[in-house]
Image (cartoon, rainbow, N blue to C red):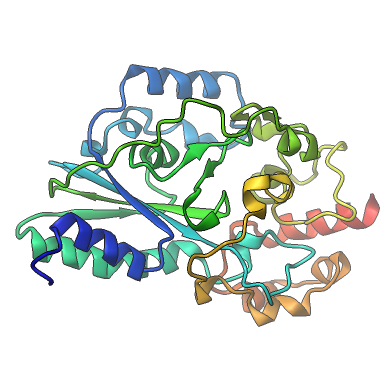
Length: 314
């Protein structure tokens, strides 16, 4: 390692080599009662819909030390899943799911970063979190200075024009790293813009809050019911995910200058599914073949067929 580079800067550069478009450090501390109360109120309102797993481990979510004993630092990272300019979007599936499953991709990419932390700070421990551990990812990204919460309730990363089309990941470590400064803004970056709210087909968005009971992404991915609510209309829309609030956001129309991650490029197999009728005709063997190693496996075959049939019925 270059002796003129500090350990924290060396780790940040390793994050960029791993493909991150933004990376920062925050002190691993309890987020406090205000955060816990806000989350509890969201749950009490029922805005998490049927995602009962979000009710679990509430006492763990506010303190990284509950996930790694002796935690001193949370390394927060954002990875863009923007498609290269030449890549075509898919009419049926959300952009984030077109490539390889991001859980596996990011864990693999962060292994060298964890190895470097342990090399620079012998005896320290690390834990990688990618969307599955009980941790408030957006709050840690805020504390680490990665971005701000937009009106669509998503983290918006200004760096390199990444916008909200990012995956978040964290490395919790017992190594003590100098924390970055949160992005303090004396104005609302969204201004009076309501394009995301207006674009939401289910009217699921309130400023910086979301009601999953009205969200098309929830219904097409997480809703395990045999039938969808009648007011969820999918003709001409995606049958897995949505993306409309992101499409409408001006921050996602800024030219992106960061790295494109090849793992997230559209899988050739998905080009075989051109219409909702193609999905409705899938059997289990074909489902496994087409979606092996894909985040689309989050929706089981009965859910995908249900969604496809709704699209054909509307």
